[in-house]
Length: 215
Image (cartoon, rainbow, N blue to C red):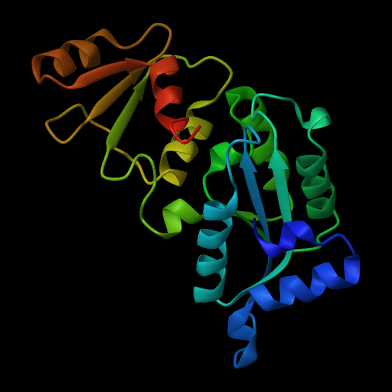
């Protein structure tokens, strides 16, 4: 377990945080950031997430001002998650300029809740997906196109989620397309063309499962 989590005294905790910012020994930070990490059960560990976030922050000369850590199902609401609630309150108070996460699904596994959390946080700051920073997003090297109405998420929000997980949106059904995501009342011509080109056609549930592979 990382030293941060065995520390409860505020002064000692801040000393540990300072030790995470190794670059500050000889450089000036360019940004104040917070890190958010989450696992679903006590049988899992946040250590790997934290190590990767620290590496990303040090490489970019981002000063880690605080770490928000949860062991809770990502399907629970914000009011049931104390650390996510604390993060959102601190963001509104502008205690940092960016939130760094291993993947946006660490914020929530519920599509509706994730959209709401992202929308609220982005009123105050930027959200950095460390997986995307490291070019290792869940959807890396995959291309997507959307057709039809999605449930509980706008087209713009869906595109943002794909791009934040290293995926790419394209505008035409062609051989470069990997996945056609279909919602309610999809364009028949697009679906037909995709079938002719042997492009994989998936529904909203299957797409969400792709985003949720990290557990």
